[in-house]
Length: 114
Image (cartoon, rainbow, N blue to C red; front, side):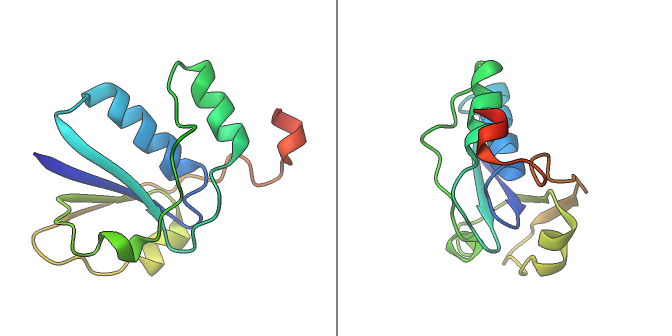
């Protein structure tokens, strides 16, 4: 079974949402994870938006990328430029993909979305 890791800086929004969307799309055909180079809490607005799409990420946690270095990832997708620059080298034959996605909540407070 393929293992996919979405990586961003805070593991608060973009990577969490990508994890939730891919899990919803592929079910148990892939193992899907997300992590951050400097993890923070999962952004409440991301949880709310995903719930509106029928995808529950409310139990997701923000994890450190180092926790996945020995996990045998097949695909690592960085979803922000900072994470792409800081992404460590994963052992093995890992496909690296980069998506430059601007943080959708960078200028918003929790109150703006709740």
